[in-house]
Every structure is written in structure tokens, then in C-alpha cells.
Image 1 (cartoon, one colour):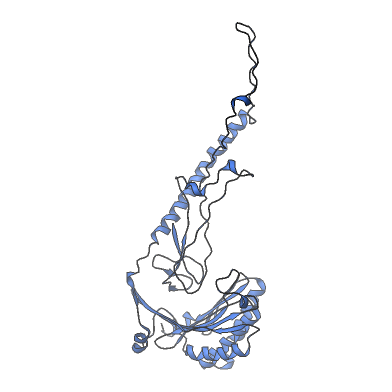
Image 2 (cartoon, helix red, strand yellow):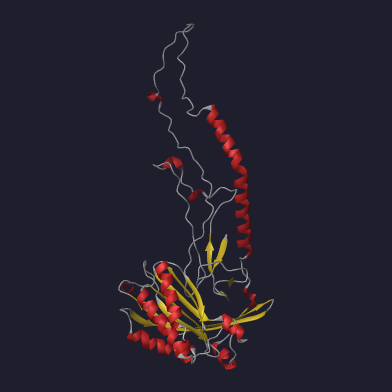
Length: 363
């Protein structure tokens, strides 16, 4: 059974690969493959005989995860139904003839009867067995309900996979730029993403916080998707920096323990208008400093007066959420933020305020 996961927020996407949290179509979701065996015997290679284990327990089969190529993201495996365990009694060897125990000699015609073998008494009483059966019978309705819920979810996952990508249309970067029409899959800041990235690059290089900075190669992905309600377009151009600390600078991206840390700006390939700001950094001080600088730079570029700035309120909300150990979903001015911690890494996403764009009749 396979399940499609958004590589950005690690949540499931629907049949059309639409992520409700990221509010966009995920073209290359992570595919989780979950192995379980319902009303069937697991393969022999996945079963460890109980008799061969010193502690009397069977080894659980491993969950395998396969994914389609994605640029970033990670996914954590969902819980699966454990396969039924199969008990295999240990084999016993037949002793040789000379090892047979001696038998008592009984003369022919003798009235003496052979000694009867005394078997083991069953350690559970009849009353205990009856009580156990009543417990099992009483729990059957609940077991049946849980099985029905599991089968319903399994059907939902099967509906969402495989995905028919015939509605996708790849677009060349030069063609998108020549058309000069912004995509309709994002809300757009009224600022140049390229200019914001250049300004942020200067700030990051002057305030590296001990990171080894590696500028990212410019990444562009442009496509359209046909839906029942019309065509949705995404024109992504991404620039940013990879940040490596003392630990990750000694590793490669393939080594265990390597964690991607980065700051990115996503903007429209056709018009250059900024889509969003994304960062993933373990150093909270550095992360908050870069966030505050981004907010100030964007407001300056958008010609928002200093007395109308949303930066102080936003930073107060974010710091308060971190102190309480809570995620922050906050909207103020032209900004919409989502900030949370995951695996000791601070994840930050800033998009254009959709409520503001609705009020102004923008898309």
C-alpha cells in the first residue's frame, strides 16, 4: 500500500496531489510504501520462528520506504498494522536406539500392570478458560469497528495512488519569461524576489553566525496543471544559501547525521514577484535574526511607512510561541507566517497575506 506525502510539511496530499497546509499542488510527493498482510500469511523470509529466539519473541518485519525524486523534504512513516505472527514449533531429534530409556521387564501373563506415565496438569483452571472466552467475545465488536476504520483508510490511500499526471504540462523557463504572465498558484508580494534575495545575501554574508555559507544554484521549475475548475500554474524560481555548522561541514549530504540548513527566496519566474521566504536553521538566534531582516527588507521594498510596520508585533508573537513551545501561525500587515520546531530545527515560512490580497482583489 502506498501513501503520498508532501515533502515540505510531511502531511498527506489528496487525490490531485494538493497539500492543504502548503496550499499548492505537490508535483513530486514522497511515496511511502507500507507492507502489511491482512488475512494472509507473510512471506517466510519475514518470519522469525519463536522457537529459534532466545527470548521467545518473533522479529518484526521492517517497514520499507521508497520515494520519488524530490528537491527537499523528509517524511516520517505512518503506523501500520502489524502482520500476524506465525509460531513454528522447534524440531526435536529422535534419540538413537541405544539412547532409549530402559523399560521395566514384565513377565508374560503377569498380573502386574505397567507404570502409567503421569502427564503435566494444565496450569489454567476451567473457570479461567471460560472467563477468558467471555472477555474475547465481549471485545469482538470493538475489534470489528477498528478493522472497518482501518479498511476505510486503506481504501482512501488506494484511491490517491497511483496519480494520473496527464494534466501536467512542463513549461520552458524562457517561454514563461517571454510571456510575462504571473502564475496563479501563489499569492505574490508586490516586491522583486531577486532584489530581496540580493539584499538578504549581503546581510547573511555579513552575519554568518559561524556558518559556512554555500550559495545555492538557482533552481527553476515551471508547470501548469489542468483541473475541473480551470488551469493552475506554478512558476518557481528559487535562490538561497546552504548553511553548514561545525558538524555538518565535516560531512557530506549522504552521511548519517547531516542536516540541511538553508535560507531561500521563491519568486515568480515570469514577473520576478516574490512568492515566499523559507528557512530551516538549528540556531534559533540566527534564524530569528534572518527572519527579522527579511521582514524589514520586504516592508522597505514595499514602501510601507515605519510607523505602520508589522515587524515588532510579528517578532513578539514568534518569540512568545517559542518560549511556550508552541507553533506560531500569525498574520499581520502583508505577511502570513508559519513557524515551528522540528527535530531541534526552527522551520519558518513567510507568504503574502491572502486576506489582504482578497481585499484588494488580487490573486
